[in-house]
Length: 365
Image 1 (cartoon, rainbow, N blue to C red):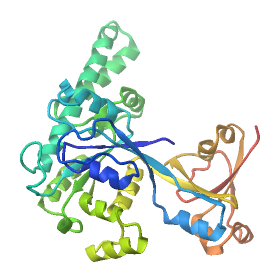
Image 2 (cartoon, rainbow, N blue to C red; image 1 turned 180 degrees about the vertical axis):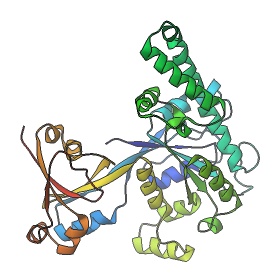
Image 3 (tube, one colour; image 1 turned 90 degrees about the horizontal axis):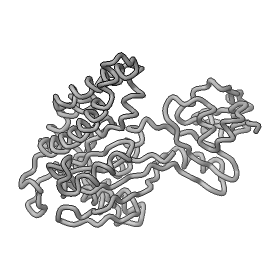
Image 4 (spheres, one colour; image 1 turned 90 degrees about the vertical axis):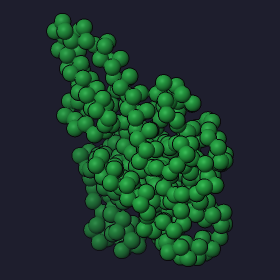
């Protein structure tokens, strides 16, 4: 599943530094606006200790983790919705992503220039929120204008669409994002079809100094309060620290560095997992001598849909799924032992796949 998270934020908030830590792709990182002109895309491995444990037990020829694409998008300025700076390109790049990681500068450093002259993460957040809302407002108003005449002449479908568009317009004009709108079941496909920027799930990433990576600071507290009011996630990370960690090739050195800071793991590992969760993604595994592999699926998938991620033929000719729980596999140590203990279940088309399931699919095409 080629799913993307877009890293957004005003210029010089630490976006490209963070992207460099997340990916082997190297975005230019410099102390001036628009140092990232084209979106940089990195394929990021999702850390999962379960995959490592399965590999230890099965000893396969190959181990393949699951991934998420991270896109570093050019910095935004006020007026982007009218094409200021790199506005149109920026907004187009966001539209192609599935979720947004909004980086906010939550550190004070006179040596790093802020585009607006002072550090204020709430102001920065509101600048980007407003530009996205204005662009969405333009999109919805255009749609509403197109269906208005048909709606007035009694076309039921047009009237339904027009009513929904008016509802979205009211929310956007009030300064709220489309994701804050409570949708009826019939409205979900209409919202999806609009492809609104502010309908995408968002996580606010507070970029802090070394002294604030554990407990946060006053800037972070303000962001957390704002995010709570809109039901968004917040994460604290020190991009400069992550850059130092990324320079260390030896795993033991990295762990010592983290321990000195009072951290158990690198912030980027947490960020990747949280981005994965933001997209409502979960993982199932296949495990055999040739390969132990993690597969990404959306929460709520049934067995045939999960099978189709491997190959469309698996879904078309689905017969059944043989399922083992991760904990059972670790406890008994092998597939044969799980079977002997009566812990392997045979599931049909209505089985809801669970995070951590180890699955074999039987199919016939």
